Image 1 (cartoon, rainbow, N blue to C red):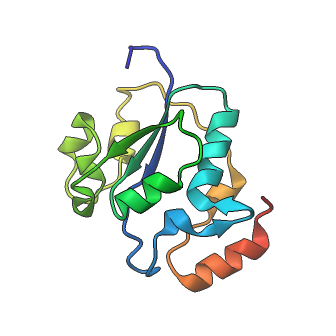
Image 2: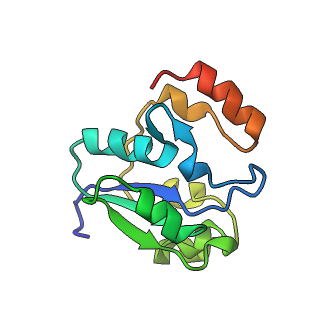
Length: 135
């Protein structure tokens, strides 16, 4: 990637162990959760969209409708976020990327996504959120 090139990175490698099924494949309107996220990313017109997959790789990859996105296979997904890119290697196990974001190493633009405040870790989370979010 060039120095000033924009990209969207969609992290979808997790195993959704608390949920008991692939979160990426949950129904979300007429689509799946992952495809809805990809659709929103495509609407941004940024052009470089990367989806990182790991758990249930084959099934999740084959569910992606838009073939213009770049799929990255993180074979070490069970070790956490720190296995996605070189800069993240300085993180330990499942430590978040906030350290890198706040370092000033990259120009970051925040985008307010009200629906982004929700987290789905259990079936009850999913059922509650389905009633709250308009898709």
